[in-house]
Amino acid sequence: MTDAVPRAVVAALDDPFAQLTGPLADTRKLRFEVASTATLTPHVQRLELTAAELAGFSYQPGQDVMVLVAAEGRKPVRRRYTIRSFDRMARMITIDVVLHGDGPGERWVRSARPGDRIEGIGPRGKIFTDPAADWHLFMGDESALPAIQAMTESLPGDADATLVLEVPEAADEQEVLAAARTRVSWLHRLGRPAGDASALAAEATEVELPPGNGRAYLLGEARVVLAMREVLAGRGLPAEQMSPKAYWGRGRANAGHGEPTRDG
Image: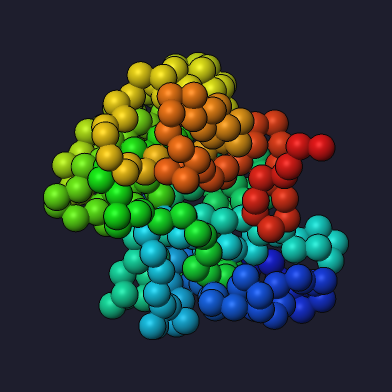
C-alpha cells in the first residue's frame, strides 16, 4: 500500500487548492484507493478508484477528477482524468488513462497497484452535452475517448450523434454502447505522431453538419482542437455551437494543475 505522494509531503505543500473556494466551491476532496488496474487497449490503462467521499457524489458525464500524482519540492503536481463511469453503490469511479510518454501522471498510472492511495478533487469540468441540440458531433483523439463515450452514452434514444475518433491503431478502438442513434468513424494514425492535426482536420472538412441547432464537441490535443474549430467555423458553424476543450499539448508537459500549458 503506497501513497502517490507521502502524507508528510502533502502536509508541507504550498497548495493553491488547500481550500476549495471560488471555481472549486462545488467540488470535494476525495481520498482515493486503487481498487483495480488493467490494460484496456494497447495505449490505455483502466483504473477503478474507490473513496468514502463518493457517497452522495454528483457529476455530469464529461467531467473529471484532479489527482495529486507527484510533488516538485513544495509544489503539487496534479493531473485531470475524465470520469469514464461512476458506480454509486460501490462508491467507485473508473478512469481510462492514455499511455503515451513518461510524465508524472503516467508514471503513477503505470506503478499503481490495488490498495495504493491518491488524493483527488472533483468533479471538475464545464463541457456537457447540450439537451437542446438537434444533433451532436464529437471529434477527438484517444485522450478524449472517455469523455466522448460517457457523453454519448448519456444521450437519450431519440438523439443523433456522430463520432469521429482518432486512435493509434485498430487495436485501440473501443465499443460505444449508447441508446442514441450513433455513427462512429475511427481514424488510425499508424505511425503518425499523436497531436498531428491532419486527419481530424480533414475529417472536419467532410463530416456532415445537419440543419438545425447542432453542437460540436472538439476535444484532445490543443492545436488539433484549434484546427478542427477553424475548419468548422469556415464551414459556417457558429462559435456558440462549438464546445472546444484541449486536454494536452504536443511537446509540452501540462501545468501543475493538470491543464495544458499555454503558448507564450
